[in-house]
Amino acid sequence: MPECAETAVVSETTAAGSAGASAPPSPPRRGLGMLVVMIGVLIAAIDGTIVVLALPAIEHDLNISLTSVTWVVVAYLLVVTVLATQVGRLGDMYGRVRMYEAGFVIFVLGSVLCALAWNATAIIGFRVLQGLGAALIAANSGAVIAELYPPQERGRAYGFNAFVFSLGSVLGVLLGGVIVTYVSWRWIFWINLPVGLVALVLAARVLRDRGERVRRRLDSLGMISLGLGLFGVLWAMTKLAVEPLNATQIGCLVGGVALLGAFAFIEVRHKEPTLDLSLFRIPAMVPSLLASLLQSLGSFAVLFLVIMYLQGPRGLSPIAASLLLVPGYVIGAMVGPYTGRVADRLGPVIPATAGLGISVIALVIFAQMTTTSSLWLPAIGNAVIMVGGSFFYSANSSAVMKTAPPERLGIASGVLRTFASVGMVFSFTIAILVAAHSIPRSTAFAIFVGTTSLYGRDVAAFTGGLSVAFYTLMGIMALAAALSAIRGRGNVRKTEPEPGTAAGR
Image (cartoon, rainbow, N blue to C red):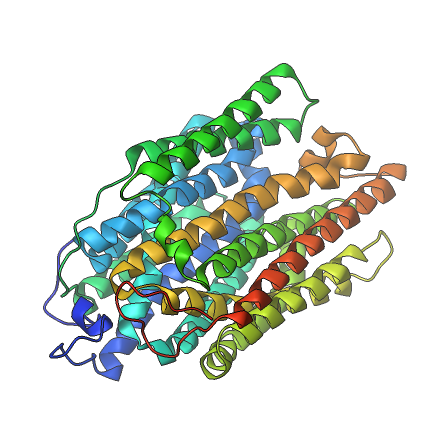
């Protein structure tokens, strides 16, 4: 991507705190740089929620199977998961801003092609391309923020990111309900075109890489083994969600696990692995990354399960379900900036752990939903979990970026994104499998995508299955809180660590 004449990103030498480095950009220019980052977060957040509400229309219009419609969501997440660390490494090699801008171009192109899709293969393939763009944006955005802001101000910056993510989720829910009901599902992808182009123009004018590039090697074997391994496991799990266990599923599951084992073997011996194991020597890094994985595992499926409940047992339309969830996203968006300030003042441990504890309470609320409970219950639960997520995201992101060596911010950002994405991918499949234990899997999945409703005894049985799923996610979230609290035994420094050192909290 082209570089511009104006500066909004602190150079590599500034980030490392070396003498004689350029002065940080002025607040107005830095603010514009942050605006560009937030637009990327906004697009990703909108796309994350808007597609969920469009699944029934996509399935009907393209005449695709239930298993195929699953991969409209899973394929996107899988690409982000596999590529996050590698495209973060590309940012270290060729410039984080340049790769961030490339992400916008690819994401917009993928969105346009998704809007033009004609069958299952086309839309899944184009979602893969869209996921590549999202990976470039996600893996490099955290590093761009780390260059824009000094360590003591990053919590506030990540807090604004949390605010924008919540705002995007609100817009995704609202736009998804309105567009699917009154226009066409294809417009959920067309709307990314003007937003992406505006972001690309701003990035070209505002952001610039000035630091020296770091020469790195891509881990092709690691990427392939990780991608195929995750694909095998996920394919088996999604098949199991709609049909009984068979030899093919077992073979894919075993093969996927074997490939993941091969991936671990490759990583130990690769000089520059997909998952940089040297980062795990930093005391605070391991619990921070595992907390991110478990938080995503415990929270990502919540939206899917709540929509299953509202469109299944409660029989709400997509737009009615979306309007019911909007207040929670609004509250989460309002809280985001303040949670970042709390992280700056208190350090990451207390707000991150508190956020996970709040999320546990939200999952308990969701588990109380029945066929006769008030519809305010999912609305309240959604508000509580959004507040908890706002506390956790800004604090945990700040903790990871503070403890990472300055010259490896891109890799650290990518690893963080990878762990969160793995949690998201498996959250979806685990929740469906647990929720579907009390009625036929194919029926449960049809309810999820909104193509059927339940009647009679199946309603209560399915609602009970949802409660079990929420309690399962609650246990996962509680484990994440315990890991987050462990960081209190270390020491995350308030200032940027020297290159190659391992500071922790």
